[in-house]
Amino acid sequence: MRMTVIGTGYLGATHAACMAELGHEVLGVDVDSAKIESLRAGTVPFYEPGLPEVLTRNLESGRLDFTTDYQRVAEFANVHFLGVGTPQKRGSYAADLTYVRAVIEDLVPLLEGEHIIFGKSTVPVGTADEMQELADSLAGPGASVEIAWNPEFLREGFAVQDTISPDRIVLGVGRGDGRAEEVAREVYAASISTGTPFLVMDRVTSELVKVSANAFLATKISFINAVAEICEIAGGDVTRLADAIGHDERIGRKFLGAGLGFGGGCLPKDIRAFMARAGELGADQALTFLREVDAINMRRRDRVVQLTRALCNGNLLGHRVTVLGAAFKPNSDDVRDSPALSVAGSLSLAGADVSVFDPQAMDNARKVFPTLNYADSAEEALEGADVVVLATEWAQFRELDPVQVGELVNRRVIIDGRNVLPVQEWQAAGWNIQALGRSL
Ligand code: UDX
Image (cartoon, rainbow, N blue to C red; front, side, top):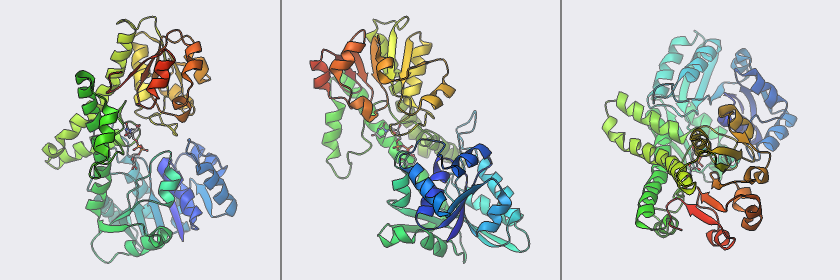
């Protein structure tokens, strides 16, 4: 099939390359010419394992190309995927729909014949219906545009795998005799043939599926982090507790990783946008608990700062602190709302001499927080540290040798902000190891 993918960020670039990988002919478009140049040259402008290979393979096969030209997009295909960003609005909890609207406004007047636009961006409920009205008002006499919603559930770090073999495909369609379902079945034929559930519903429900999934995941993480707060006071061990409750199939162990909490470009902004939308719908009480989910999450960052201060005899001034990790999670270079970078920044603002190392996110971190010291290696960052904070659980940090690291630091004191280090090994090497939700 021929199709276009509008917006080439994490979501769009991955979707475009993976659709070509599945055998489709794909044209990706973005208003950012630097991004398009980079993608055309076979360079993914962010870190995503496996994606560079898929991109190059499909550029070479001729099935994949990128452009900034909307006229080309209008002529290339009748099926379009919309994957532009919906960031948090400045000064508000709500999602900013400027980019989504701009796509409809720029593309629809150029279309001729019958077109389907599949929205993939995470949007407040009601957006798809609104975009259908907007498209209807902008379509020329020879054109008709059907808007369907096809939310994306990919995780950074597993984006290729999640796009090629999703665990479910959700499609929201409008009322009437549209062709979106038939076309989507063709687009995703490979996945559907291997038994991937294909769930068709109305557009409103499909929009809600996406935000509910992310709100649930965020709630699960904050639940275990709230229990971690209790464990810290009562003297329990949240990791053993999570193992024990996780054996209950109804609960499950996934997303019960207690620690510094969630960040990134999705979970934080999606729960806030969900609350904002609930308020607009006159149902803010329904989601008040998400405020608590957000607050528990932010408190974990404060806790690590407090713990570091306590380990520096109550005063961070003049102490050297090493923060291992800047990305919001491992296998990503994304620092949006990163707990690691937030902790590093707070420690620095409180007077500590902070040294940061991350295997992939250094450039992005420098842009957001230029005043921190960025080391060229973990070893360099660890040199002379009074306290070490493990903030992002990259494999490289999980596998650090406590004996070797002990030779580099000034004091053998470490906070495991992600509950991933083998505690006994570190203790045996003479370390004072502290962790969130555990009394060690
Ligand atoms: C998330 C959703 O998982 C994905 O389905 C959606 O499409 C986009 O948002 P992503 O932002 O890539 O994906 O990250 P995810 O793997 O969900 O992790 C989110 C955050 O939660 C990370 O900061 C991670 O460190 C944290 N986390 C995750 C925990 O603190 N504990 C856990 O047990 C799991």
